[in-house]
Length: 176
Image (cartoon, rainbow, N blue to C red):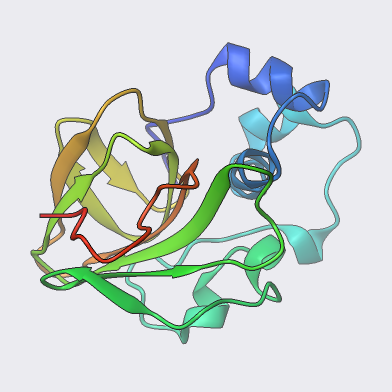
């Protein structure tokens, strides 16, 4: 597996000293379970084999089996549509004050607009491409502004999205 996007040096340093929000820590740790170079940069002891993540790029397994081991047992809310062919569900008990941690699911070929409230996105299965380049499974992107793209026409996209607590809140559609 060849990953294209990794945590920045600044984010790795903040993670190592514990100066990140719970959702950001979860995203960096999940990425590191699939990316050996990043694992060496963010943690000291080697990870036990049962915590390693081998992304299912095709997304054919049940949802729980497609998630990194760190995410598998975290309770989730129900999926809700935020735009045509794009839905989100929140992860319970992992966000810090002022933070939202969500799974985003986009159907094959769906248009995705990540609002300016997004800080990080971790690809879990499938692929998306857009102004951020290509996001594959286990890629971790830091988002500075609103970003847009399209889910892979054959695979769609499942991703972990971390942002401020306005992320996907309320009734207005935040994704195009």
